[in-house]
Image (cartoon, rainbow, N blue to C red; front, side, top):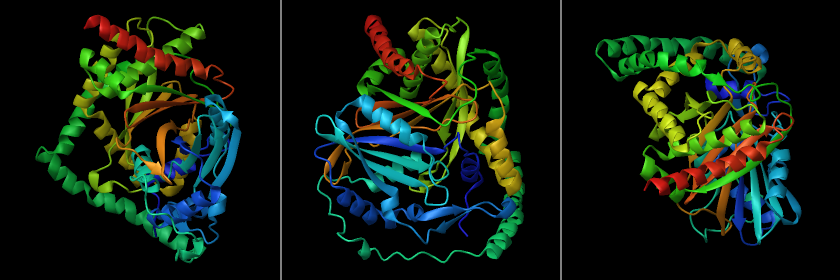
Length: 468
């Protein structure tokens, strides 16, 4: 049976009425909107390339095994591909408000875990697709791979089949409850043994000075620095309970702007992006009267550990690092220097690789404990982390849907636990977009954060020009 990994299952189990665990995006296209029927036919034609789009998650009684993927015997494309419009001419606010409402709505866990909305009525002869896919199915890199399957590389691709009846797909019979339990119990015993069997080989590698040894040693060396980052003063209002509603706003930048900053001050594109986000949080806290000179915002930064052979595999292959955003620092160049030093230290310590080793220990957990632990982890009050920041590189070549060019893509990331704000970053062609997800009631000033990110790019450009 095709089972969810421990990480995929963790994302599935943490969902509740206040924590919809899907990732999403708003895709803006040029040209007249296609008909709803054409969009339906397009997605039907793509379904053979995405088997997960016709599968649902089935859990076991008492969580005696990890959930499994099974074919949805009642799959109906019209349920998953939907049609709506904003009052014409729809501007950015109308699109963001609509998306915020749709992103706040949970996917139906009894059906395949995705949906898309065709949105008409945008200004400037544009239209949009709003997409939602559950996090148990994809991470950021897998989401980009999925995007490139569903869209076209050519402006004039072969037209999709005209009739859904040409799709020969037939669902596999659903396994019985007895079969699920029996196989789940076998998996609950066999999976830890399989991972345990690898321990002697890992031990031999460690004695011989292998890469794993280097990772463990580097991780150990990084612990004092990580502890120090956890001791720095953080902002209180960024943590707290969250409700079922979401605000979602965005900001924009050009890759040329970011490269101009990097050329002058050094570091990476990601360092510059994190520094701009730091300015956004600085403005947010200043507006609330909470900003102090020694303050930081601790951000969890997911890092892909996906191997090249795992591309186009829909699952989660993530680790994470911890970065302190120095919001109390006045000087933008000093903020960038602080981010750069932290990131360089984390790369030397190989913290992400070490965290991946620790994350894989979840494969040893009993499925019942995995289910209970996943839920408990996101319900436990914590103030160590204030936000999540994820940066996903997208394609640098044009993509099309039904011959219409994709102009912009804005990402949506879920928020959970006591983190009230998350920031997703996506690059496409020469454009970088920031999608800010916030709890609706706790963060009425989300636009201040978005405006601050743009101001962060502008001030770094100004500093780079003055320094040149």
